[in-house]
Amino acid sequence: MKIVFAGTPGFAAQAMQAIDDAGHQIVLALTQPDRRAGRGMHLQASPVKIFAQEKNIPVLQPETLKREHADPQKRVAAARTYQYLSDIEFDAMVVVAYGLILPQDILDIASSDGRYGCFNIHASLLPRWRGAAPIQRAIESGDATTGVSIMQMDSGLDTGDTVLVGDLEITPHETSTSLHDRLAVLGAELMVKTLNDLDKGLDLARTPQPSAGITYAEKILKNEAEIDWHLSAMEIDQRIRAFNPFPGSTSNLHGEQFKFWNSCLPSKMPTLQNAIPGQVLGFDGDAVYVQCGEGVVEVLEMQKPGGKKTSASTCLQSYRIQEKIMQFKKD
Image (cartoon, rainbow, N blue to C red):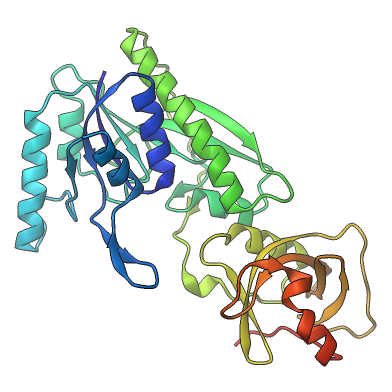
């Protein structure tokens, strides 16, 4: 099949590679414009663009797909993209973490002239966690399971019919990094199966999303990073793991901001009389125990300012020698 692929991050590039490996022909890649990143703030191409260039796949990078946009330059770029899609031959469109809203006129092109329409890999069991950050919100909320939904796109926000669903268990030590990687593999497999079924002439079983159980995964903001030690240990643990790799949970110790990358709920519960939220209760191997508003969290991996990720105990080694009482605080 001939496929138009729209996506930006590594999650999308993995699906793109799986589609290519399965023998389908990607005739166009749509991806976000190059962004400045890294210490040098140099322009960097997206993983989807990099893969497309390696395979000699044409790439378009409009800032918007809305032809009625107020900015004349963006409007022209959107019109060119619309015309390009109108002129090329393709069978279906696949969208994975693209980052731009597809207006109805683009969806109409994908479903016209005998085409199959537009399919999306969404990293949740819809209708739970529609929106921008389903992986992080699932961990933050303590969900036991999540998964991937292959969705036939419509004009709503992740509201289309599902055609294929697969689930995964969220382990007690899951971070957004590890869950992202497992879901990327599952999503790629399910999308390839969907395209293979279409190529064989099989009818897809479209299932409308139920009206019950709808939740929205709002975009993760940097101001969510700071740990409120008055929360329960369970809530803090879930947030630390959910915000790995972005934005990384933070807290201050003696005027320095530390990042927290991994944690768990301890199997043994250290106690210290009159301990206050944020207070370090002790060390055990690589771990550091910190008092919360309710219970104790076992911090496993941290990073001090200007340093590298390391075990929590190593990160605080100099402090445990110099300080009798250590307490993490909010700014």
